Length: 464
Ligand SMILES: [Zn+2]
Figure 1: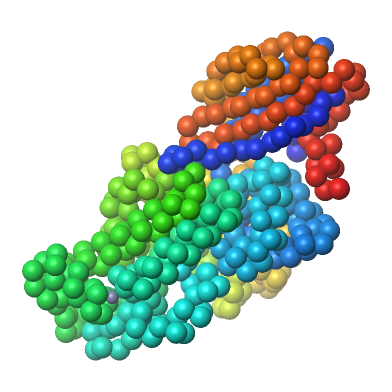
Figure 2: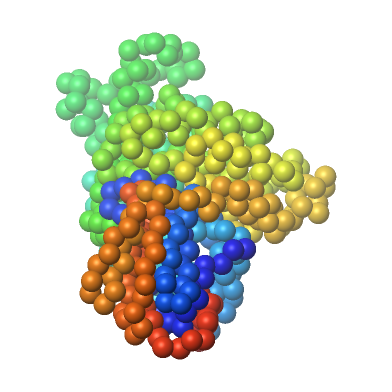
C-alpha cells in the first residue's frame, strides 16, 4: 500500500479533515506531500467513498483501546475511508463513542451515524410508555412501527437528534432504510397506509375529504384514483419524514453530510419512496441504495440494473450516490453463499458505472459461507473488496485547491504545488474541492536533517 510521505523532520501540530456544508459526498482527498532540500511538493489524489458498517464494539477505548485501534488500522490498510456506526453504539457507550470518533478521525476516516428512530437507546422506554404512537391499519389495528406523522414521535426524534448531533461530532448521518408505514412488502400485508387520527387530519387538510379506505388491495387497479391518492400521500409522508430528520440533525451540527439509504424494493417508482421528491430535498446531500443480491436471490448483474438510473438521478440534482455491498449472510442465505468474485463484479459495476462510493455491510458479516465456497471467509471477502476497489483509488485531482500558509503568508495553487519552506516555519496546508472531504494539516519544519515518515510517527504518538 502506497504511503503518504513527508520526508522532513516535522512536528504535527494539528490535523483535521472537515466535511463540507450542504455538499454531496463524492469522495475524499488524499494528498501526497514530499519534501527534499526544503522544497515541498504537493500532489492531490482522490478516492471514492469506501465505507463499512462497523458493528464491533469499541468499549476497549476506555482502557488501552488496542483492539479498536488495530481494527481501524487494518480497515485503513484495506482502503476504507468511511465508517458507518449505528447511533445506538455512540449513545450507549458515551465517552467511548467520543473516543472512537476521535480515533477514527485521526486515522483519516469519515464517521457517519447510522440513523433510525428506534436506534436511540431511549426509544425502548419511550415506545413502552406510549401506546398511541404506532401506525393503525385500516381495520383499526395498531402496528409495531411508529407513525411519522404522530407529534409525539416527531418530538422524540427532534430531541434525540439535537442532543445526539451536538454531543457526538460525527461527519454525517444516514437514515437507514426508512419506509412507511411498515418495513417493505406492506402492500402484501394489506397495510399501505396509516389510519391514525394525525394522518387522517393531514389528509383531510390537504384534500378536503376523508382518507379513503381501500377494500381490497389485491384487486384494486393501479390506475384507480383512490389507489393513486393513497400512494402519493404515503410517499409524501416519507419525504417529509426524511426532511424532518435531516433538518433536525443539522440543527445539532450544521456541517453534517446528510444521506438516506433506500432499498431496491422502492425501485424508481415504487410504493414507499418517491425518489425524485427525495432528491429535491435541499437538506439531503447523498442517496444510497442497498441491493443485496444474495438476500434478494439475485445476481451481481441485478445490482448493475440500479447503478445507472440511481446515479444519474442523483447527479442531475447535484447529489452523490453510493451503493452498499452485501458482505453478510444470515439464515437461508448461507445455502446460496457469497461466491468469490461476486464482490469484484459488483464493485466494477458500481464504481466503474459512475457511483461515488461503495459501502460494505458489514464488519465480519459472516462466520461461515456456503459449503460450495466454505474457504471463502469474510476476511478473504474483505481482501477481495479491497483489491477490487483499489483500482478506482488514487485518481489525480487537478481541480483541487491547495492553500499553503508559511507562518502567516498564504500561497494558493490548483491541482499541485511546489514551494520552498524556510527552516523553522510554521506551515499550514489546506486542500479543498467541492464534494470532497477537505484536508488540513499544520506542522512546523524543524532543523533536524533526519528524514522521517511522519504518518507513522504521528500514529505512534497517538497510540501512546
Ligand atoms: Zn399515522
